[in-house]
Figure 1 (cartoon, rainbow, N blue to C red):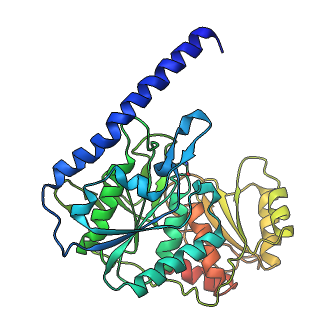
Figure 2 (cartoon, rainbow, N blue to C red):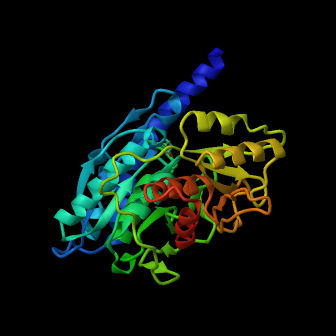
Length: 364
Ligand code: DAS
């Protein structure tokens, strides 16, 4: 690093620290100003379950980032007090890529237990790293039963960044949970003033605050005065996790020209019970990979055809081809990471491709 660059970096760090000292309290002041009402004793009760991510990180771009707890995250959102009676649970404090399927089971059960033990709760907010937020959100959508909503949120910018989005997203997430119109909508993602269905929300940009999009469009807007939903609530019944001690292994294979099926064979050898294929277009794969997938199906692995395009759908139905070989299940319009989660849960009920296809149909 040249002296010039080092001096510029020091100046930048100084400016950023000065701004932070001002901006974090300012974020709270702005939210307080918009709330205006004195806290009412009958505000809805909302539990915030914190798991980590950028919303709970400082020094993010230094290569030496630090974590902060949910208590410190909440200091930047004092206006929350006027919206809800908030309680918190520090479930974890990790980057989202460290969240495992075993943690999904624990998180889902912990939320279910809290809802059962606390009938006064309007619902639950989960703070989460954004990289894999959509996966945890969909798992919760599929497994937390009942009408009370779960809202997953995070931040694209760290807690000590400039123009931070975390406090606004957290404030909005609590407002959505506290709103009675959110009942019956399952798990939702609230980011950047929008409410997205957990089933459809996906991170489509690496850094921008508007990174989350939905292939079916948003469920609603978080306007300053009210939450506006565009449609009536609807969701299939949740999976029953009682008796599930471990989720079956399901992997994703990404297709490309020349793919020879070696990845498929390796995953079957590693014990995959299901494979989701990010095929080209409507799920097409090159010939050698197709043969490897047929071998996998013949060994009892359930194969779901998805698409690497990022939008559109693949028919769910399964059956037999003219030469008698079993067909794969189509992912519908689920992206491949969501289809993997649905397949993991479907496999806790049946490994018959026709039964799995029926489950996928119920979730279209
Ligand atoms: N820190 C990354 C994560 O945990 C990114 C983020 O939260 O925005 O997913």
